[in-house]
Image (cartoon, rainbow, N blue to C red; front, side):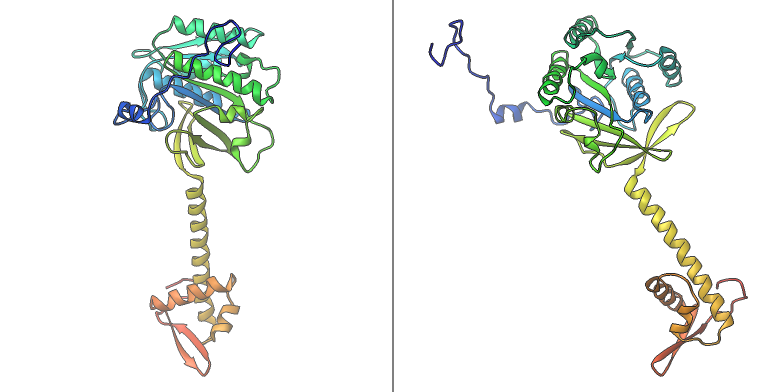
Length: 337
């Protein structure tokens, strides 16, 4: 048998190729995803988080936004039908949530599957495809959670996970839709949020978008990593209790910077007050004597002292090598100028 023939005698066919120029010329001027700059219209995404971080809430909000053609987290969506596989939890919770989210089906329909999946993952995927053949308008499939559809024997096996993620990707391409699957995160976190999904790194590596939900105290946080679009740095998610809907807030970094700024502002106000009160008691103290009467870090106390002098509230004069300070503007005891 030659190297160009299969075992059955047929010739091995070469791969189909396209040139880079052909691909470039066929590219649209502007590309809009299912959810603008977050989810591709045809692709696969993973939504990961520890239990009770809001994954299902997030997914249902996405489902209604696509079906209704409304924005999701402030981003435009492509309107279409949704197939939502609810594979754990009571149906009543979903019913109430869809109602609160304003599901009207005036534009698109949310088709819900609430049943036990086959014990063989291969059969579950075949049933999923058979269902999609009957629903040609579906633009989004949500599998919540994916473990109960795939039924993997070893979710830690990179080879096994890679094969099933490839199957999900093929389903998305065959039916021109976006498939999002939900998976639980590990109990113990790490510095890299991308390491949080339970199982092989094949889950993380085989998708187009990975969305991670986490909690710090009562605050929910979202971050993403993406092949297309701009990855979202850790950002606060505000939760509307009445609608059970989420919205984007400021980034965690900006929030921390704002808190630090507020803390420093309060500290500066306190130091200013202590300097004024010290000068109401001590007559023309030297800089060293004045700073000793005020609590706080020396560098910050010196900065506040300079600011008070620059603003004209204090004045100083040389006394040999020392500088002595006094209040330039009359101040009543107990209040800053």
